[in-house]
Image 1 (cartoon, rainbow, N blue to C red):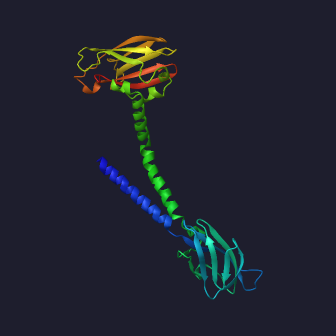
Image 2 (image 1 turned 120 degrees about the horizontal axis):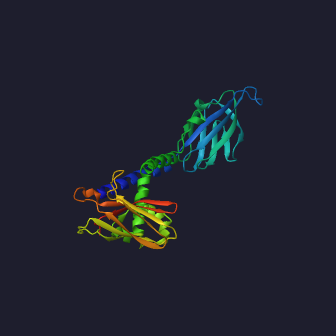
Length: 301
């Protein structure tokens, strides 16, 4: 199963990177006439229009030519750069960098220039496309695909991010408090993040099983010793983990003064009647902190 997951992940990564590489090489050259002025004061029968050429791709486009209907005759009045010329019915642009646009204002004699009158747009390495309006302009395909992949990948992060974070954090806490985990403790994340832990090294724990926790121990009592190495009283309580509300048959508690230790004895759960009751849940109230749900497994040693 693990090998299948690795193969599946590798296949998905290969497909995604192949698509991204293809889209980054794709040429995206477009031309549009966004504004048309039917009446021009500088010409009795002419019209003014703005013509835009877009390079939406990721490559530099060179020797761009925009061919107009041969019946139209025009004059270049203004342009966004010096490398633009207009010869007869052909607009020429020397170079257009990726993600950039070129803008020109043309005076058209005896006619109107709209998208239908643009016969072709091309460059040294690409054949472009005429669009009717700016809103029809496609985005950069490579960036759009990466944006889509990001949001698709974000879905499992949102759905399973908490679980993944909890697993990583649990593994880290276990590596730091490995000595406590080896003797039966677990779910120590809250303890690790608390101010209480600052009074103990990673090899220490405030609660220690003294008697009754061994696998072959037949006694009915579990004995613990609580070590309070802090300057505040420590209130420790314990009960069977799966105990129903109000069930205190396996409940015990003790208040330990600062810099002192105290015993804590609790009735051992009936493991023969309920094998799932071998876990005890400890809670520690320390000042304003409440470190709860620390789990001890009976017979783990």
